[in-house]
Image (cartoon, rainbow, N blue to C red; front, side, top):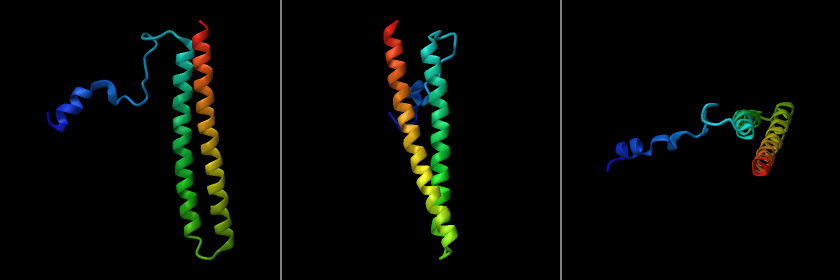
Length: 103
């Protein structure tokens, strides 16, 4: 079995967001989980982009203390944002699993 045949056989395993349509599931906690998970993924991607931008800004400061400070503060803010996003995701999963188990 070559690589292309394996990829075709994988089928739906490529769906990283695991989104279902409302007709598949009418479970409100699952829907809220999906929507907030997507929002957190987008926020995480933006935080990583901001981290890269701030790192480039810090590296290219070329001895300018104001630019270096701006880059350094951006790196700190991006890391704090990434930590907050990860914690929000963990809390979301805990709450959804608790609410789903109460039914």
